[in-house]
Length: 374
Image 1 (spheres, rainbow, N blue to C red):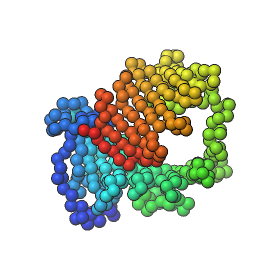
Image 2: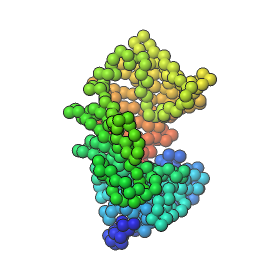
Image 3: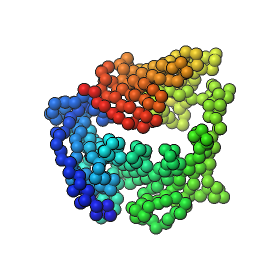
């Protein structure tokens, strides 16, 4: 591959050696660094273990070198379960400690065979590429089933203007002039399927999204798919027809909702149309979970979700202007997460056994720092 021609120069300038020993942490299935241990043997007394180390240039797999630069550092994180490796994460960070590449693969063996005779051999995992502003510009997804795709993102002054969706297939010589496709993408077998284009109004609210299909996918009379949004979304939400019929927003801490065709949601509202309970039922009318909301005027101050023997509780606090400034998340009475909002900055704290273990700072929805608490 062409990028390997520059690898020797990068290696010479990347003189970093492993000056620090590998750090070992007690972890969980989500690969959180919960508590640092004194040694590997002590760490492996736990079911889940996370190792973190700084890599040499020679440690970096060949298929990741094209995303590496001489001013980057590389960090390797390996998650173990019962002493067996589950996942390995590669992080490239620039001199400003901004993550420029994040790669995670579930298959930890045979990675050196990812490319065979310059042909891509799919593994189960993903690669994310970021620019110097920490904006996601490309993501690659690979599956052992043989399916793979790539999405490229384009920005204009920090606003997302378009994204292009590619699938992996046989090599294609077809080029599209209405959106840029690199020659490398053509050679590696990525074929453009569709592209989304975003339009904003003067207040920077999303006004419309237009999807254009390629690769033989047809739309009636060749017209693109276009979705327009209300001039003022909040005005649309306030219309009376939405009060009892809309799905009530709840904390991400409660997880996603997955349902079969015959599953259904039942709402119980008070006299003011506020949702008091949400019950999720299967096709035999058995309750899968139920959420109960407590209101103060027009704001939810707490939501409790019961599912099986697990009780999740989210508590909220608001400013005088009505903006949510605090969210606390509990699992079976134990504090797990606290989020404080200060303007466009969110400070997220994670707890284990009611003890603070991790603090992250987010700005405009992007993580800018993460600190493990000893």
